[in-house]
Length: 80
Image (cartoon, rainbow, N blue to C red):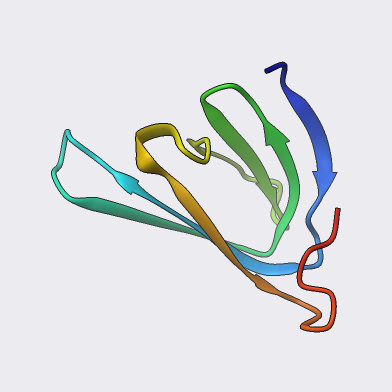
């Protein structure tokens, strides 16, 4: 899969990635507040937040990663 993005995810209040982390053991949880843009790669997601900070996290399915988010608009929880 080729990289894609940016996808506008500014409607989300936050998004949380959770994956197995063999280096430190157990599940690792990483929350990004006020995400704005999503770039999807082959093994990672890059998320730009409201402060312009870029977060690099495992892609969904990689290392068992799952992603959840808090929608800004409950009537339209998935937008992009």
